[in-house]
Image (cartoon, rainbow, N blue to C red; front, side, top):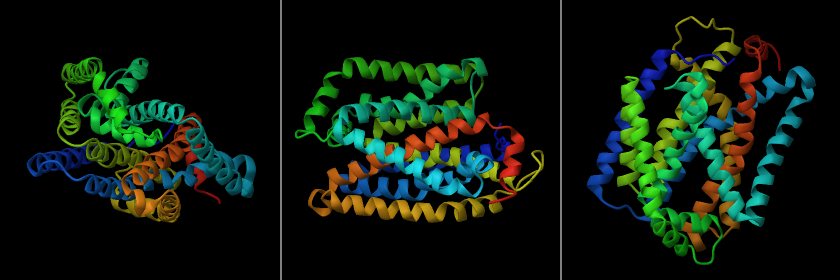
Length: 331
């Protein structure tokens, strides 16, 4: 089992995420539509500062899984497997972009939903599957339903289409199906949260729905990814690191030392990933096609990182709790 995140940390994250999401939503509504270049800059900064670090500490858990079996040989095995999975994702995407995008969206639903449910479950464990799908669908279905033309343009670039705007036209034609489905999903989650008296989740659902309805999809996704998903995962990692350091599970924990340890563990691989992304951006066209290239680097890059990241963290709960403590005893 993984270390539980202290309740004070959960509450603090929710308060901060609600406040920042509300401010961004209000500011975006007042400021009006943002240029695509501004949206991409915000998305790139949000992913770089808040998204990449939460996966850049995966080496801690690679050691947790592999060091007991491989000893000092675990780093090249972990790095080779991680890079091979990421490269396979990129290869599949380039050869069959429709399959690549479809698998990425499906994996995103599962990954986003499972992380949200793990930190703040609404339903009993036996119903975790449907809740995972419902909550993971929010950031995937809402932009398609509320902003089909803009989302379709992004999808068109990710599909390497010669006429990307045509994808937006296709999504707009599906609006009579996708919009009612999205509204039904929001209503169902909101009703379940109110019945369970989960006011924090009800507020989260309302804010996310409002964000995707009012803001461009890139900005709304960045809000979800940077303020809700990534911090939730990072808090679980910080709590796991406390277990690795031998901190008793019931002992009150100061967030500061954990954040500093998290930042040190994430810094190297975050910088390396940014360097690779910059190289890929330039190789794909860079300034000559800045919008298309930026979208491809951000989201195909996220897909390449998400597959090994999600696979690794799906395996962590299967380890005994004592393994967390042992992981901190040796290199």
